[in-house]
Length: 471
Image 1 (cartoon, rainbow, N blue to C red):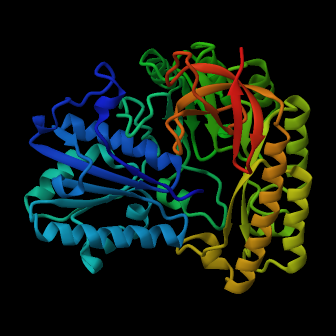
Image 2 (cartoon, rainbow, N blue to C red; image 1 turned 180 degrees about the vertical axis):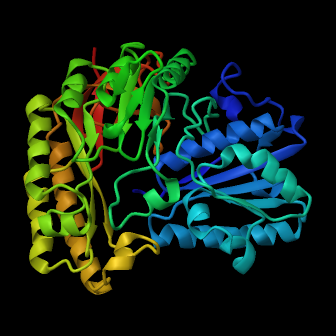
């Protein structure tokens, strides 16, 4: 997973009708500030937290110095993310020295994993709240305002926050994340998620469709359905209807042909032909799948408890390309997992050669306390070897990405405009169905965010398609 940063901003930029926040920043006597780290699920959770805080009379602020309540929504996937959070907390404590009434809290996976350590040993925060305890925030804040340190990291088998309408944070007004499930039942040995987010449970399908429909009615044109393993989504409705992931995809696709649907993340053991055929059936379901492989060697995959083999993964890729030849494909790769040999590393490189991913998230193995790998295996691949293998993986993927993007030169894509290019306000940018970023010059044609345009590709880098509008 990529390490990313998210900050609360003034929600009125999305439009008066959609944002619950008042335009006047002085309308609130209490203000909050949130930073999020880690996966898209954390971003989605921060939007739930913002909704709960709004209900308690808090307004957002861009400036941490103005905040009465500061939250870090944290990630435990990698050691670097945890260290970044610690550094930020130390910076916030310095700010608090000049604002004694400020409350500092930790949310998310680090909160769950480290629990009261933040409160007792490091004394960096005032309250600690796990991913399933956000409804308790009003009570915890009241306790903390009264001078008591507060913590709630209890995991739930039922909580999905299905009835809470998320406040879209720093949204471009075009694309939004929609959580469809929480937790994970896969016990991958390298991963902390089952311990920090609990067991898997799927959200009420009707509430998901209603949220997506509401977003479309407020001008959003793309939703990404989120889950640790979306392919295992399953909901039994009160009327007896059984909703699997392919059924949910179809329900959301039928809202409007103008609403694009993406999803993340898929698990190679669970993605089915039914899902692939549903994707192929509807033009507005994007032809892009993120399918983490982690390793190209069957023994290492078993060591990771991924529950599939190299051959199984290659078969799934073949099925994707047989049913959707134009489907974009990305992955996750870990170098230097416990006991990985040089030969097994070469198997990962050879699998990458066979699959030719458009993009990949690539990391060297970082042992996380509390995981099954930390308990069972010795982290016996040296850092030098991990880094060298990672460099080889990155170099190979970069060459594949360049080839993939160059192969699109001359093609024409339907692109959803997300906004102006970061490099020039003379250019628009947006993504095609394969999730590739497309940049193209503005013309005299009156366009805005959320419009669809046809773009013919003239050139490409290893991460961006460059084109011109046609038609």
